[in-house]
Length: 185
Image (cartoon, rainbow, N blue to C red; front, side, top):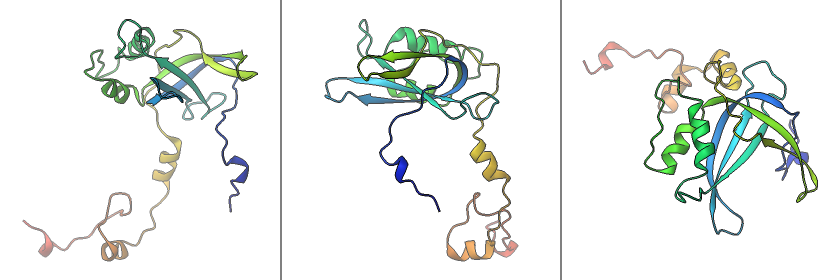
């Protein structure tokens, strides 16, 4: 049994040591609390598929609208994030919409330098991303250890029950035996 009471409502992330980390990006467009503007919220997850400290920790960065092109978010930082992918298949730098850009950067891997800073507003130490510290990674794509672990776990599903209870899927069936008389060809 898991008691999650102590985690309920916890929206703070622990501060990690300053340093350079291999990360995977997750980005989303959010609106400020007062609803007057939006920003690009980028989460850098310290990769947990490689050997490094603080695996699975997050550091966040907000990119606000660019002053020269208010339809986009901080062009200098956005472009610097993109350039880390220039040697990867499917690399691109032209996007019709912000959503297309967000989809493109979600899941990319790169290295960032994290700093510790004292935030006067919240009166506590926080993590920030060092300005334009985005670097390409020499590592391959991110492999979620949880999904790898699930895939390595033998499937114990009884296929006869799956077939009777609904449509079989690749997730719940190791082998599907269909009599040749039932095949359409």
